[in-house]
Amino acid sequence: MERLAFSTLPCEGWSMDEMIALAHTCGFSGIELREGAMWGITTEMTANERTSTLQKFEQADISITNIGSGVCFTGNAGDTEQFNSFVKIIQLANDLKAGGVRIFLGYFNNRRDSSVPAIPYPQLVAQIKKACDYAADYGVQVWIETHNEFATGRLLRKLLDDVDRPNCAVIYDIIHPLEEAELPSDTIALLGSQCVHVHIKDGIPFDDPMELSWKYTKVAEGEVPIASIIDQLEQAGYNGYYSLEWESTWRTELQVAGMEPTVIFPAYVEFMREIFHTRMK
Image (spheres, rainbow, N blue to C red):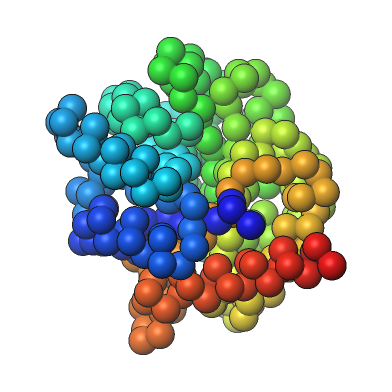
């Protein structure tokens, strides 16, 4: 199994050498680089810094699966500033030979009893088209994550069809469609071949029914049917990475002893290898 990756999200303050060393030690073949100063990858990097970073990965034989940007389009006025950031990140992705840049859509609302602005759908579609056209000139794909108002395959399917750009694809974050009560079989069928990257995580619903999101757990300790999802993806012809997105940076339930990347990452690799070993029997 050579398609395991991790997001550098929980690796704040680490050097790139430390991230690559952990990947080697654990058995990862890809790394998903979170963009930002605290993760060592920024749009302010000089040409020499970009070249040096790429050489580190090539020498280590570790793929840069994508750049995990924080860019979020809503179809509203703030998209101008977001697009300016997006432009710089696309250039960074090109320099680092990353195939895709992750973006979000909509608003980060975790509660049913709080409201967010309406999304002007035609404007959002136009904004994504503009982003895809810019990225295409650099040979980079735009990867929309299943998140926020577009967490489900049923909503993303229409959006992808309306955007109609060959370099527009999806990161299937496996927990978010479940939070919206969409079955994995439906998500996978609806996304089809435009599902190019998968975020693995686990969790359970909060006791509070007003919570939109689930409470995160260690992988294999929650209610996300990870093995079944992987089996369905493989049967559907998925050939991308399975990337652990360990959100200890944001999630207080993961900010406890025993949840450090040095503990969680090797356990994840062992868990995933067992799933694939079982599938081969």
